[in-house]
Length: 220
Picture 1 (cartoon, rainbow, N blue to C red):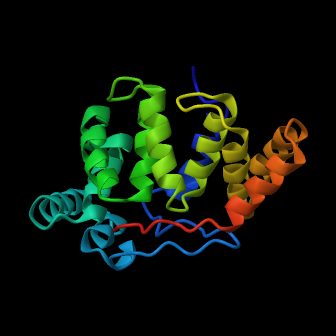
Picture 2 (picture 1 turned 90 degrees about the vertical axis):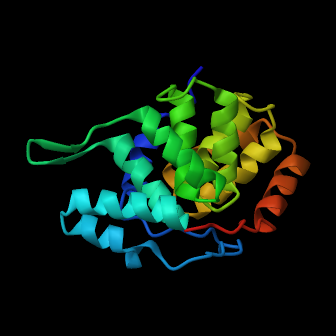
C-alpha cells in the first residue's frame, strides 16, 4: 500500500535537491541544531555547482570514507539516486542500491535529507526491499529533525495506520507542524478533514504537542 500523498514527494524534490542547506523551522518550534558548517561551504558542493561532477564525486567519496563527512555521504547517495549527466554523457549511472547504501549511512548519522530520501526508497521499493515500516521509521526520524516533507508523510501514515499504528493525535500534530512551515496547501486541508473526526480534547492535545515540539539536532 502506497502512502496516500505520494505526489507530495515529487513536490518536495525542489526543496530537498542538491543545493538544499537545511529545513525550514516551524513556528513555535526550537530550530534544529547543526553539528557542522552549512553544506554550501563544502568543497565537493562547490565543484558540483561549477560542473566538475567527476571531481565532486571523487571529493565526496574521499571525504565520506576517510573523514566520515555526513554531507559527503548524503551527496554521493543523492547522486546515485538521481544519476548525473553532462549533455548526453552519463557521469554517474542511476543506481538505487548504491543510493540506499550511502543514504543509509548518512541517515544513521542524523542527516534529515537522507531520512526523507531513504523513507521514499523504502516506500517505493527502490534499491531496497519495499517496507512501509522502514519508510515510517525514516520519515519519523526526519520529522523529528524538522524536515517538513517527512512531517507531512509521517502524518499521512499515522492517519491511515500505514507502516505505523494508527494515531490521529500524532497525525494532527505532524500535519500542524508541516502546515506551519508553509505547506498549508497540503497540511491545511488534512488538518480540517482529520479534525472533524476527532474529539476536541484530542485536537487540543495535538496542538499542545506541536507547540512543545523541539527538533532533534541535524548533522552535516
